[in-house]
Image 1 (spheres, rainbow, N blue to C red):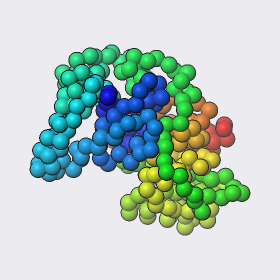
Image 2 (image 1 turned 135 degrees about the horizontal axis):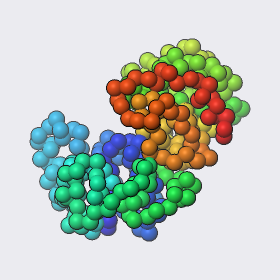
Image 3 (image 1 turned 180 degrees about the vertical axis):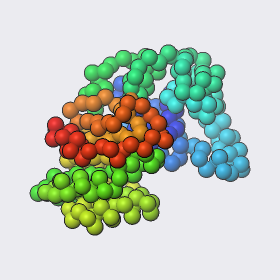
Image 4 (image 1 turned 60 degrees about the vertical axis):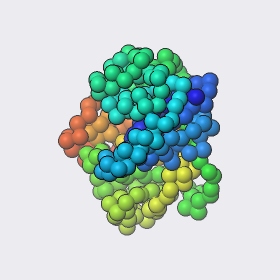
Length: 304
């Protein structure tokens, strides 16, 4: 069985799933343990292989045990979609046949590959297909459903109003639309049902602050499975450039992604996905997202 390596982050793992329906076989998927749940129930994946890389960085004993565990695994061929030194090392442990980029994100990673593919595309999802020597932009614009879940119902979903998800968190502070902007956005959508999933105390505090100032907003904390289900049943998602926002993209749920210190070099816009950008580069020290105007987000939402 072939294996795909995409260790992190959640958004990147979600984007990489675009390759699966184009393959004529099921594969194993090698992923950091932190993101394994996003892959659950996927019919294109035969085996999910979680690796505790983040924890192993802080625990030498765990590092050694993980090294020995991974070394015992064997796959006919591995495709390293990550292109980093750590993913190249993992690839070298898993198979004698290793496919990777001729120009990976970290140059040293190419040392580990037997077959090297030159990447020339701009968007991440196009580059992932390149590794399998597939060039099909029309497919990427009109991709099928990519995420799956154990179904459930939600009392917080309205049957009379549009259900709009706000994804307010992000790994970088410069990616986060200020809370005051979310409050303004929620009040501009006062006739709709706003749901704000959160994780952790910081997001919880922000979610409840928004709800305190917008009576149509409801904070909620969910498992990854339930988050997939909730977004899939919603009418629209508006979110920062962060992993959970791309659940909507993956399942063709209408979405507007807001980019501050990053820009859209990940997915192709289509009839479901729109972008609001303030600049065309990536600089995590550039704090300009507060300059984004709510009217521009609403304008994009109205295009659907």
